Length: 147
Length: 377
Image 1 (cartoon, rainbow over the protein chains, first blue to last red):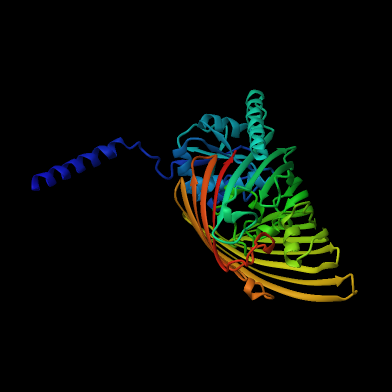
Image 2: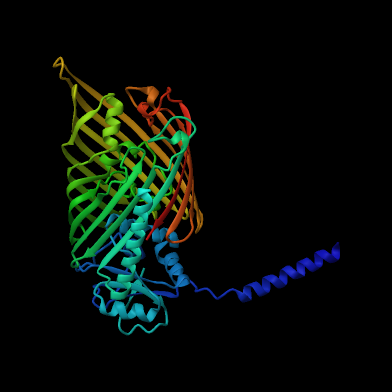
């Protein structure tokens, strides 16, 4: 009985060690930066305003240009962005935009497969705002400081 | 059979449209749709059809097209059809259709057929996939009145005002009239209440005002709504005029992580005048109804959400018609497009029950099971 318990404990410890090693490294909060088209009339946004933008509650910049939020298809990146800035789960986020879609009051944000595609789109689209991992080359767009 | 054919047509149109959409890569028009097939079975009392024996006469479907003509101007239309017992019968109507011009963040205008801004969930009532429960609390969202409550033909101004420390305010002010069409629940409800056939039913001017306060506390918002309208009903033996009808609703919604709490309370005042053709006698009746519900829904996983509500509907003239409803719903999201819901209602009261659909005296305590399978894209 004592031998069986020891074997089980050792097995559990080995499993936990290998389990942690096999889990893909998750992005750490703070690695996401907000980017926008260079013509967007601000370099700083409150986090609550970023939340309003991506939940469809704020539709225009101060210069009356339309705000065009865009997101990434990458689930882990998108989830981290939602957790850090929007405080919503992916299903809650989807529901917000489904409601806009089916009442005719908005379109869901465009989704991009890669950060490169998102940056290209934001660079050429007036009013566009999105997010990438820090360290990504963002020469064609500007970063937005959030506070 | 008709519903099957319609569903196949919709699906074929969707597949065809997707192919065209992909080959031309034209992203200027967005197309979305849904179809929801339901089943109802009540323990006693027929509800909106032959529910005591079990009925599939319970479905909704819609297809919408929206496009941005410019940064400020957008157009959209949603076709909608539903069937609930004798109501709707899958007749295709326009659910909403409007042109919208956005001047500023705080001012925009829409004209057309607009969903009535009433309470928390009136504007999404037609779309099963946008809410937890199958049947919304009848305290504010009675299926019989859905046609009248659904939309107003006219215009509205709307906007958002962001104050910073106090949060944000959104407003919606609508003016127009209501057009319920044939086979409406409103006509059936009127015939049920008066006990005679209606020959004509016409709404007068309708105003709806909604104010939303998104507080500085994340997930907490308060909503105030006022709707005012008038209605003229003609029958072969009497004229019934709803000269004054005003409904005031206070709503609160609080999203805390995966838990969503909601509370809505309404007071409705109406002044009716009845004129009997045979004698020329006329009488005025004033009525007040106070109703409320409280609800909670929790998303356990990406595929499972459980919700429940308690709904109370008081009829000041006929206390025996007071209605209480305890509902529990299990929602299963199979993937981004499909969901299944299973729901049970425990009713006390016969307010929902049409005596014309029930040969025996309705039971005071009864249950209703509802299930839906919904596809949306």
